[in-house]
Image 1 (cartoon, helix red, strand yellow):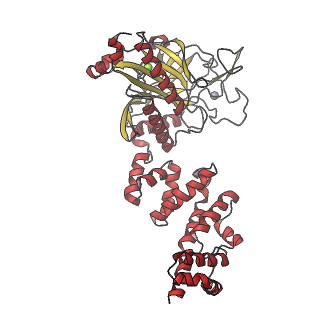
Image 2 (cartoon, protein in one colour):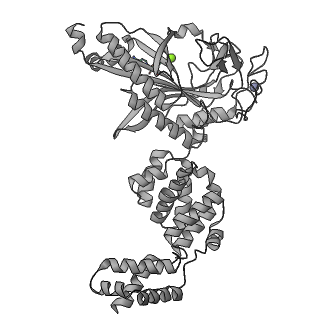
Image 3 (cartoon, helix red, strand yellow):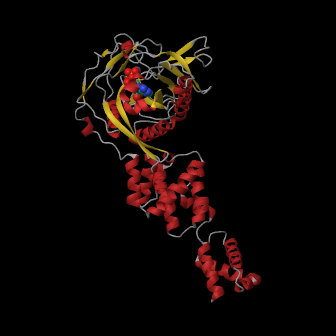
Length: 492
Ligand code: ADP
Ligand code: ZN
Ligand code: MG
């Protein structure tokens, strides 16, 4: 190693190509459903178009274009007057036509950006383009691995699922930033209602990484990036996978450079189980694909689509509004906007109660209990009325907060019962005044020692008496009120 290379300040530069499946009912160029039925047989959700049979023609799904325009608005991208489709030619068994219908020179979205936070720093990355294309089918290698399989099966059920390929500029400085970006991207896409993060394989990342000299980068960024050899890591299907693959790749390339070796410009494969990237092939260049216009799909005029299509309030804006409009803490606002469904649920509750009360019940109690049961707000959003009734019972002092939290809410989730039914079954209605008063008297008479201790100034004695009353009333009295009554009796 020369002293010079050892001293060089090397820095990582990363750019992403993220493929996300758009949530539409049918595929992008045919009427086949996109939703996989449980245990569906391979190649059952197909037709001549998505099987690429000769003569079958594509018909563009309007819903896919609408979803793409929503994404464009959310990332503040330009949507052109006219968008076009191209054929990207390559031979691979998951691609029945031997070309993929994609976009090339007139993508549906260009020049957008996405802001995200990482380690308390606000970052914004440019999204160079985001285009529509069709998903290929999927391959199943017998035995699991492409290297060792005796044969490979192909399933075209996925073929034709609408994809959006989102391409960033090379602006990420490390694997951690990439992970934070992907989380933010998914959050925004889910808010738009165009994406389901829970769907298997709904997000796939190709990650490009190069190591450049920090000085050269500062001097002339464009040249430094254009001349750097980079690798493209494919087959990444999770945020964590992206972070691990890029951290690995950064170390591998830095080590090579420090040993005076070149980094080869190549495509690499992320081997999730081994936690390493392996060389696949030399990187193909654009000219390898022989892009040409898709003659079966006319150019699509989308000039007014951006104005015509509405998108919901996005997570950052909603978080901010929750703070100003409801006076919530940053932490509560973040929790209550974690998904659009949670935020909608909270706002429905907050419409009926004080915002603090609504926030406590949704953020702390409901989300906590749901989380514990591996449930989501979407599992209970049709029970909004029951949930507000529960808060009403507490608010009107008809049941204690403790019983509401620990008995009623839990049984609502576990047994699917309405709050009033549970209150009735468990006898949780607050004990009426007379019964509490009688229990207070009884506790005083039955415990002269505790009374003497209290009078001698021992505060613990009062707690003991409160406990006696709570026990006598089966926990249905309000501890604060019991405390007050005891004091009134003893002090008066
Ligand atoms: P290609 O034409 O080879 O596909 P592009 O310019 O279209 O290259 O970029 C593809 C992806 O590679 C983009 O996500 C981009 O941000 C990323 N990229 C480009 N140059 C670099 C680099 N020097 N280091 C890391 N990523 C890069
Ligand atoms: Zn089809
Ligand atoms: Mg490219």
